Length: 563
Ligand code: ATP
Ligand code: MG
Ligand code: MG
Ligand code: MG
Image 1 (cartoon, rainbow, N blue to C red):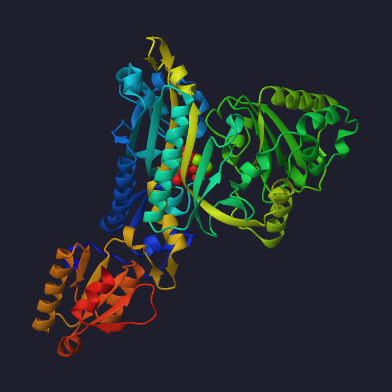
Image 2 (image 1 turned 90 degrees about the horizontal axis):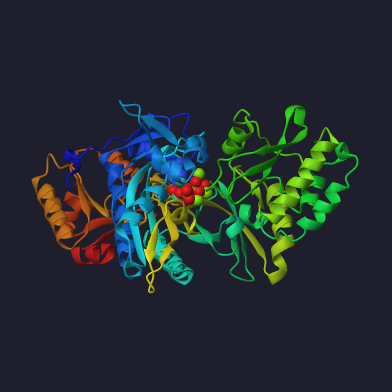
């Protein structure tokens, strides 16, 4: 690739609305340009990186035995009505009408569409197990799109869905996918952790998230050094419902509810509060109810109890979702003040709360901390330590905390969708059996931003080789005046490409300083400078992006270094 014929457009200034380093650097490198809120154009440069990530994801999915297909992004209302998610999905679902007034949505995820495909295609146990995947654009009308492609509205996701005759087969494929994800994130050169996600009523290991470790991550993660316990703090806080039944009894006896602080109520409910947990929500596996402890007006905590119908596939209520279901304005949730009194105005509300918790226990409801703060100050770290350690340091291990960016999520869905859509196959005895399902997502476009959060310096991006737009760049000094330099640089480019190295030639004719600054900003792992002086000495100046010094190498030494 000759950069004179490629569209590179770097800029020095950073836009005011770009908070995260990855967002700033993607804009400065000219990888993305904003079209509208949460909608980004991937420039030729950005797309090269996106395609590399996509390529690795595809290779490893194929290696794991999954088979690629492609579902439509626009999907009919009727299909989403069959699972009840047309209503339940909430505000993130973008609804569209065609000229005949027929209603559709833009797919935020594709359980319905794949299960519709499966019920048409699969009729016998002999066709199982099977894992279908696609790498396809998704749309979620995020209430607060931000950080560029990190939390966009339109984004690229790899979503896979597996179908099974029995649970054992589902569990085996779930493990297979976890192994594939581990290979994917390892090949991408990222520091990551698989953590227990909040899996709601299904419990256990039925849901895990893969996080890229980065201080800017929106999720707080907890690890123990004493075992391989690792969890999203949300999930860690949600775990262990044991004390709740007893607490509920106590709650019934509360006589002066107005004196209860937020901490008291949390204790009564058997949940732990951390300051990073800005509110607490309780919901059923099917999303029938939500209870939120929220900061109300005038800094007084309030309890909001609502009957909701839209959280079917959410293990965790987001601020926006709670707001939506309680009919409040977005942004109404603030940090809880655990020591301030909670306003429960009437005894009847306590009774309602108690009934709610009793009902919740019986129906396998779970309690979850909702956490969407970004900055983790020392006191908050201490809080989480208290909360999680109380529960988890039983293994004797030291508790470590880190921030993470969710880049992947694997989940044992069970039979919920197959049941709703009547997706059955005949088993060995010719009996119609509802299939078990797993689903496995990867945020392909988010990975690009997450990688930058983890790999950058003052000069710009430092790509892991596997996802760099080019592995190497050949820079020519004084190309216009010096035909020998041009010829040598072109020959070197051809040689690198013949050796299977994805290389580019910077023949734009920039001054060395500007040329090097661009290559550092866009993060090319290997830079080779061809100059008159080098040619005379029979060497090339080589510098790895992450290295502080350049060195002069002969051709063999150079190829050895890059390969
Ligand atoms: P988050 O907690 O960040 O909102 P999610 O749990 O809602 O993500 P999933 O439904 O698990 O997302 O989707 C699978 C993957 O898609 C996520 O792990 C994430 O990497 C990616 N993803 C989800 N929402 C977005 C978004 N708005 N922009 C970019 N990537 C996203
Ligand atoms: Mg989400
Ligand atoms: Mg999530
Ligand atoms: Mg998720």
